Amino acid sequence: TIFLTTFLLVVASLVVYPEKYNAIIFVLYIATFFLRKQNAIRKEMGRVYDMKGAPLGRVMVNAYSAQDHTLIDCAMTNRQGRYHLKVPNGTYYIRIERTGIDGVVTPIFASQNMEITHGVINKAFNVAYS
Image (cartoon, rainbow, N blue to C red; front, top):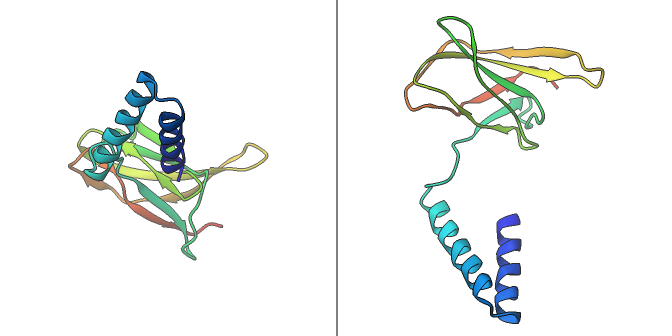
């Protein structure tokens, strides 16, 4: 997609203008490609869906400590309903909120407590909201 398009532009630039900096950018793209293939730089993403299975974009996913109910991390989902939350190991619960066009924040989901042992919350949530 975007990576492939920009890679093709870098290759074209290297062919048309075989300069040192174009070669360096080309090598960086090749290195990035192999790192992505080995999941070295890929984020573990969670997803938010409505009850029909369609992704919910632009909703806020908040992770709270189950011990003292403090907000630890938050992320807004992208158009595909994906989010990434990095937290210390521990027990958390998730609240998902949607902001309306009038600016009013509406809670649309609350999870049960979950134990996180790998530092990332990447669960899929089905939300009864459309």
